[in-house]
Image (cartoon, rainbow, N blue to C red):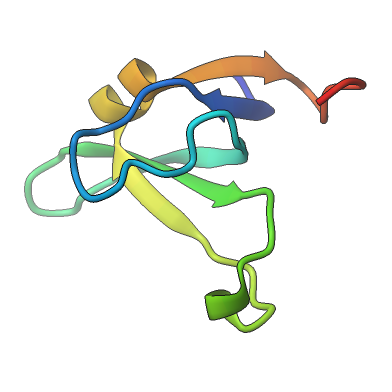
Length: 80
């Protein structure tokens, strides 16, 4: 996985499928201790009212991340 910013390009099929087109900061690859399953840790690069102004660290299965996100670059794109 490349360090940097990713854009969500696909809907997972759960819920409303929000976030398509939104930007996310990749933090790193993490491993579940008992199963060894790999996950990606990331931060959505936006503010949501229900988050009460907190940074929201998230995880998603690596295979899902690779299927649903595309690499944008090392930083925020000049043009959104």
